[in-house]
Amino acid sequence: MTLEQLKELGLDEEIAKKILEAYKEAIKDKYVPIERFNEVNEEKKELKNQLEDRDKQLQELKVKAAGNEELTAKITELEELNKQTKEEYENKIAALKKETAIELKLKDEKARNIKAVKALLDLDKVSLDGDNLIGLDEQLKGLKESDPYLFGEDKLSGREPKPPTDPVPNEYKKNPFSKEHFNLTEQGRIFRENPELAAKLKAAAEGK
Image (tube, rainbow, N blue to C red):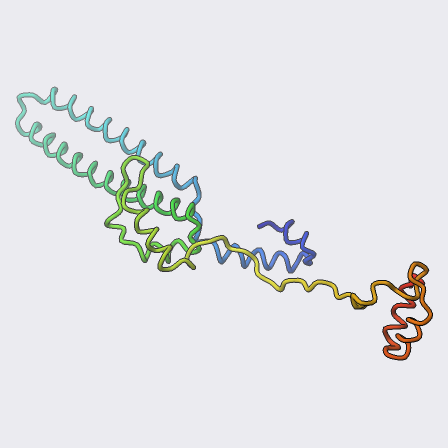
């Protein structure tokens, strides 16, 4: 929804801006920017490169330290620390990537509120295999059946415009005051029974 679309509905610009701001505030938790997903992948690549460089440097240092037990022991300690750090960061990146993939999936499934839907899911039973989420589709299917209101397009609600009312009843579509259906007898009857309708028919016949 854009400002231009609201203005096309006939809304004043100031009112349209307020509606747009309120709408953006209402949906701010529903969407995951694709930039965030790309950022996770870039962080993972950068971390991998850094750790690989560090491993290479330690291996080179280990060769140079051959025969020096104290230095070799220190290098071994650093290698273990490097391995532990690598595992911790990879776990964090994997968790972040999984979370982002889940939120993108919920966006595609038109979840009205991503945080609310996530709270109803057992995310421990969801895993990420490459780009595929395993164990999520089944949960979403059940949730859509039990709580369908959590999903669907958000639309602006408002009153339906009432169709214009026709002041002339169907039985008088053949206007006895018009040239095509001119009828003095019918005119007299309508004047006696419904003077207001007679005036409307007469005005319609005269093009007023």
